[in-house]
Amino acid sequence: MRRPLRRRHLNAAVQSLAAAQALVRAVRGRPGGLCVLTGAGMSAESGIPTFRDALTGLWARFDPAELASEDGFRADPQRVWDWYAERREAARAAEPNAGHHALARFARRWPGTLALVTQNVDDLHQRAGNTDAVRLHGDLLADRWLQACPRRRDCSPDAAVPGRPPRCGECGNPLRPGVVWFGEELPPQALEAARQAAEACALMLVVGTSGAVWPAAGLVGLARRRGAQVLIVNPAASEIDDEAHLVLRGTAARMLPPLLLDDTVLGS
Ligand code: BV8
Image (tube, rainbow, N blue to C red):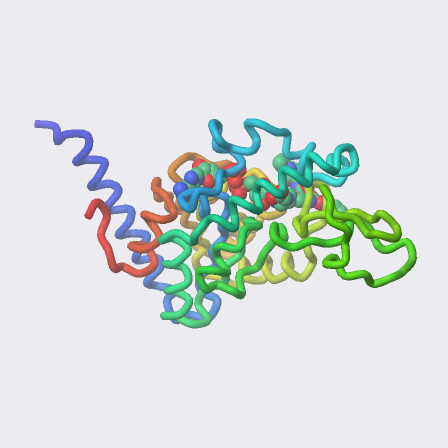
């Protein structure tokens, strides 16, 4: 008699979790043994919409190239500023979830093993305790001037005259969010640190990313080509699933605690 479908799925899930836990156990205590790359899915269970989430996702309502780009900002500074203001509010109101906390606990329990690289511009990894996370795409909560001061002054962003966006009272230079916009170079130091972590790790754990944005997505293939095992945690298919040795179809907050800390079992 064929076993009910659910039982078969659960057994498969338990087996792949056990296999994934073995991969993590194998790198504990190994300097730089584990590189973790996270995307918007990491913060979904904290209430921050992902870019691709069809119903509430930002992509569904706006064209990111229009908003998350210098051209988009110059075309309509107020609209872009308001969009970021809305996202800042959501990020400030959010709390790290069990997935963020599991990464922070892992880093405390096995110092030096984890290299955490994130595409996320919220500060949930840092608030959970991973203050050394490599931020590839900048910081949503930071401000900087759109361009260098035409008068070569080193004005502090705090001195900006309030507005949407705030501007320099003397030259009108607007503030912009401290994120990497499409078409802009990633911070060279962060990208180099991420590349070194991907090349040095024995296990690349990819959590909550569609793998659609480059050069971040390229870090996974780089790690694999250097001999690392690639493990993906994502409830849905992503553009980099082909790079994976093992895929766990689940969410960050539910899968990372058992995966990293072995302290709970699936389905309990
Ligand atoms: C550059 C900050 C050149 C801003 C962001 C090669 C091939 C093709 C295109 C390119 C290429 N190289 C460059 C490009 C162009 C472009 C690019 O990649 N375009 C894509 C869209 C095709 N890249 C760039 O423009 C980069 N810059 O190339 O500059 C250059 C070089 C030198 C000198 C000058 C210039 C800059 C890219 C960075 C852009 N900035 N963010 C802001 O946030 O406003 S990217 C932004 O979008 C995020 O940071 C993130 O990286 C990305 C969204 O991707 P994800 O995080 O993966 O999120 P997504 O919603 O897509 O998916 C969520 C996933 O989570 C899903 O898979 C879902 O199933 C899963 N999920 C859902 N819930 C959960 C879950 N998983 C786990 N648990 C859950 N609960």
